[in-house]
Image (cartoon, rainbow, N blue to C red; front, top):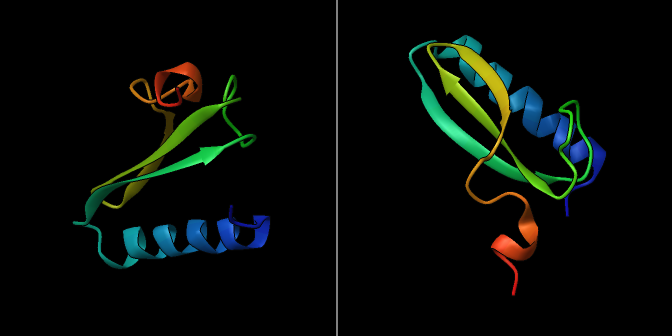
Length: 71
């Protein structure tokens, strides 16, 4: 599990890539117990990057973690 400092560094890296390479696209998944998203307990957070914009969403497929992916 990453520390809050490492999570912040990852957020900064994704933001840098979006600014520096505005045509970039991709998705980054992480499991977060907190964060700025409502009802994010026991859920995966997805950062979607497209055309230099990064949006945060809850993943509708793997969340909630229990019992969907853990037996």
